[in-house]
Length: 79
Image (cartoon, rainbow, N blue to C red; front, side, top):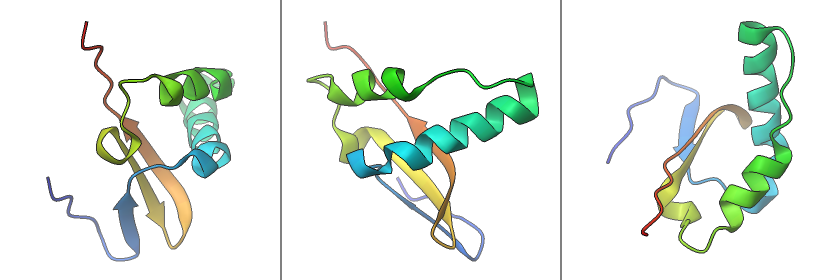
């Protein structure tokens, strides 16, 4: 699937070393929409460690000029 993004934005698979940046994206969303930050670090670590999660295939990190701007993942349990 090809993602078309505005100039200055790029998308790629998330990597384990992106954890802090992805947590910051969720925190910014939480503050803007909910008004408080919900802890997500452990949740993401658990999801990313599942044996059926393929990070290159199942995740996307959108960056704007090198800074994380959005994150998405699709996770399915084969059982």
